[in-house]
Image 1: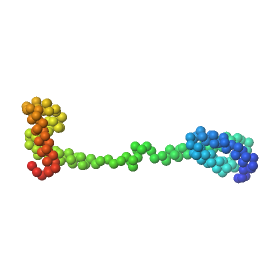
Image 2: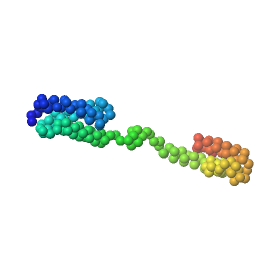
Image 3: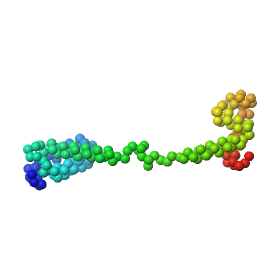
Image 4: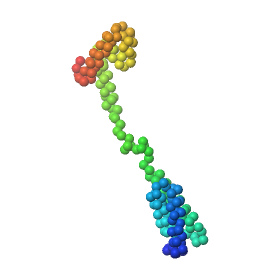
Length: 168
């Protein structure tokens, strides 16, 4: 067959355009995407018309071209997809450095070590171990109010030690 389609085949191709559009809508919800698929199918049909065998079904041949075109596009789109958002490092945001917290922890340990034994004990019992004021009072054999005032003074000293590590 020559590279230029004869008038009969041209007319058949034009007649099948509404069917091609309907078939394309089974692949795409968007009308513009479906029209793009129809256009690409028509271009491939005309470019490969020399491969069409007279006596076979032109409509089926064009539908096969459309289906193959859609499948090829889908495979390419899947391969080229950027991936899930949670996999994308650019979208992950920043992660705070752990070194700073480690250093702050060391500073706190050193400041705690510089406190008097009584201040260190009250902070360890209430703030670190999580004992209630009542439990701390029973353990240290003093009144609840005494635990509260000792803890307050110990926290103030600890804060001062953290702010001024060379004092004390």
